[in-house]
Length: 93
Image (cartoon, rainbow, N blue to C red):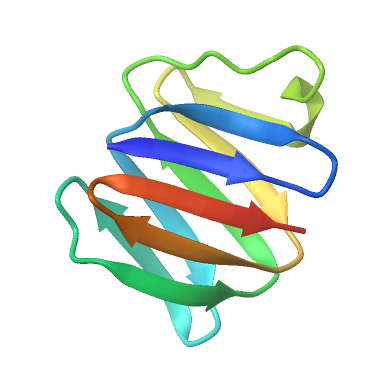
């Protein structure tokens, strides 16, 4: 599935991912390939991204924390998420 993370300043990430875990207002949740359509509000927390490979632009790489070659973390203050047709869009503050 495709994940796109957008902040008011820039597109932070766009690429093919295996899974993404998000800090929802009612608790954390994970989205995998072929997940049902969903729209949700996000609270302060960490977005966990799992992918076979990452291509993060050098301008925003300092916003991410590398766990290992397949996992990165991104701290957000709040945001919204939409999953539809195997594309996840996160609007993050």
